[in-house]
Image (cartoon, rainbow, N blue to C red; front, top):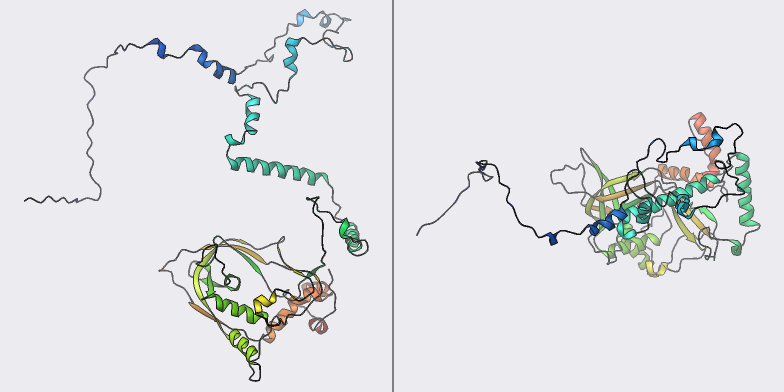
Length: 431
């Protein structure tokens, strides 16, 4: 019994060339009989000939030579030129054969390259012959061009007197002559206003800096149709290696930890930390114990795709009706919220930056400076420096002399803030 084995010494099989020698004699023309019925009839090309007109090549006389010797009025001193220059009030009768010459050349007719104008315009009205991205691009360009024309047509007065006039008119429209029935939506005539809010800065969070993160995919390991209460209390930790900077993403281990964390924080005012006292009731002591420490586990790393340092048109907006939130019981399980009730209004806070994140490819050879697998989070009291920094940021909306103080700081190099403004300030804001 023989055993056949093969072994390739090379990684790539060797292909040997085998070129054929040229023929010894020139090729012969063989007469193959062909049935004439196989050929197409001349009428087969009539449709193609009508759809593709021949190009009209014109000369210096535009294809219409004129013999000026036939017009005697051009050579006589007092000749009658009514044949060349007819009276507009008494035009001669148009010959039906020449009626097509008065047609619109932009919609019909042929050009020098042989293309037809009606053919190009007909393609624009047939969407199934074109790709959708081309149609959407042209529609956006047309709408943008129309908006630009309208914008250029309206002249806006930006002088200081005009700005002061418009500001005074806005106060009168919002206070003296304000009426919900008179409000109209600029783009939807059928939409009517049902309630109005005063737009005010959110002084509770004004000293904080907020960034807007957008993920290319939903973070976490759960599918899109499964609710994940952990996503609104995640942690993004800046990381740095020798050649790259990215963000580490952390989530709680289970849903109960995230719900306990949010429940305990909602039971306290902003920037407040519970005191661990022995004479507290059992239920409040449980909340303090929950708030002491929360574990966040590492999920994965994300890298920034796009960073916008200035976000002028996006804000955090909270519509506050002035009443205690009815939905807080479902979040705190019956715990009375300690949030201070404030007047009715729409409270806003600007966004500092906007980032787009995508998953970072794992690299086992990459050296981290200080990688954490678990973050044990607990809250502590603010230091004196942190409180001063918070009050300086809050003075922007509670101190009416903030702009003047900042102007003096630009001139002198430092800011002197009034203690009264830092400790509470007046009850109004200057804009």
